[in-house]
Every structure is written in structure tokens, then in C-alpha cells.
Length: 304
Image 1 (cartoon, rainbow, N blue to C red):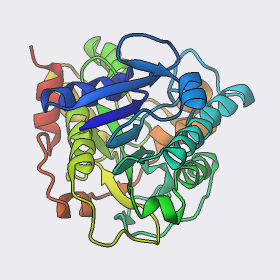
Image 2 (tube, helix red, strand yellow):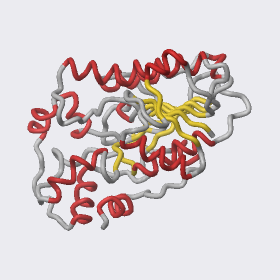
Image 3 (cartoon, rainbow, N blue to C red):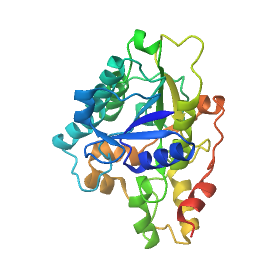
Image 4 (cartoon, rainbow, N blue to C red):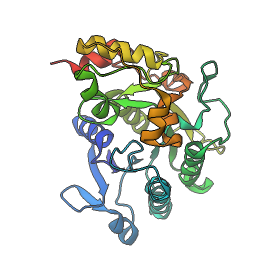
């Protein structure tokens, strides 16, 4: 299978690229910079989509970029790097002489309203309630194919939680303070913490690319998969598990006002609140998690 990956040079993209190539698939990356095995966004606009059987969109400015202050310029970049690039890829898919058989858009669980009691599956209805949930709505809307193209191309929207793994993602910023013994719960620690190991996120994407087309493609939109571990953990449980894995104390809670001052109120809500999300359809599709619980995931990430 030939697969085009937008954002393939990022943390998740590298994991997916490695997995697909290990499976014998051919991967081309859409990047801002030219190079071997790559095309640029300008190449996509001028030359169209290269022949492929699968397309994946992973591009987007890092929401938790510590070098970017939460202001209007940053919010604009968050939107443009997700929605505008998705539109560009959809245009290329739609105008391709032979569109890919699978189109995978990776968004996030920010669409679900934070709650300590509600339980969200892929069937849960939702409406935008803040800036990030509106971003997900616009993002997924930009990724929807027209009915005539959708009749040929399987559409899948994957919504991951916090992505954990070595060398990137959420762990890159979490590990230094924990190694120093300065780690602790965020706020009360009772907020849900939906997460997934990067290898499982890549595995879900690979399974979605390789799955056969349904006999009659649905006209009511893409298939949605929650990409979260089946364990339902809180921030406190994650904090304690990471402390045990590192053999470090976790005695210093971070107050909510400090997180809001550091990250901005709209961005801090991602860490200070959370959603109880279950991967019902992901499990129904037959995916077998490599890291279904925190002990297994954190053992792989911080192990020698």
C-alpha cells in the first residue's frame, strides 16, 4: 500500500511511518521542507495528490508548545495548521483521478465536554462549547469528503487522548520535573485523564488504513474511533503511576491558578479538566492494545 502522511515527520508521524514501512507499505510525507520521500504543501497544490491507497492527516501546531504564548496569533496558527491544511488535502483527494481507498483524519477528544461523571463513546452527541471544541468541529468539517468521493474512499476520524511515548508528546514536558522529584497532581487530580501510548495510536491508524471498505459506504459521514486506552484513569492515578515508574515522590500539586497563568485559561483546561472517554468502536473494530494500562505504558516509556 502507498500511503501519504501529512505531518509524518512529527512525533506521531514518525511512529506511524516506522510501523507502516515495517509492514511493507510505501510512505510519502507531506512536509514544509523538501527531501527524500517527501513532497511539500506547494507540490500538493500544484501537482496534485501522488498515486496512493491511503492518506493520513497528522499536521498541526503543538497545542502545548512551551515556546508559544497563548494569544490571538497562536490561536490563529493552531486553526490554520489544522483546518487549512486539512482543506488542502481534501481538495487534492477530491481532484485525484483515482482517490485513495482510505482517508484518516486525526483530531482529538477536546470535542467532548469535560466531566467527571459523563462517559463518552464514539456515538456520543456533542456540540461546541469552547474554543478547542469549536476547532475540532471545524477541523472535522473541513475533512469531510463529498458524497461522490466518499463512495470510493473510506473516511475515518480518529480522536486521540494525551499521546504518551518516548521522545515526544506529553511525556517530553512531564518527565524533567518528575525526574527531579517535583512532579505532582494538577489541581485536585480528580479530573479524568484520557491517554494512549503512541504505538497504539499508530496501530489504530494502520488498522484503519488496512481495513476493507464497507460493502456500502455510509452517506452520513466518516467512521469515528476514540483512540484512548481502555483504562479510565484520573490525573492523580497517572501522577502516582509515573512517580512509581520513576521511583520519585509526587508530593507537590500544581494549583489551578498557576497552570492558567502559565498556559492561558483556554489551554490550561486541557490539563485541569478532562473527559471519561472509552474506545468502543475501536475495540469493536478488533484492535488489540499493546499498552492497555498505565503500568504497561509507563514501563515501556521510562524503562531502561
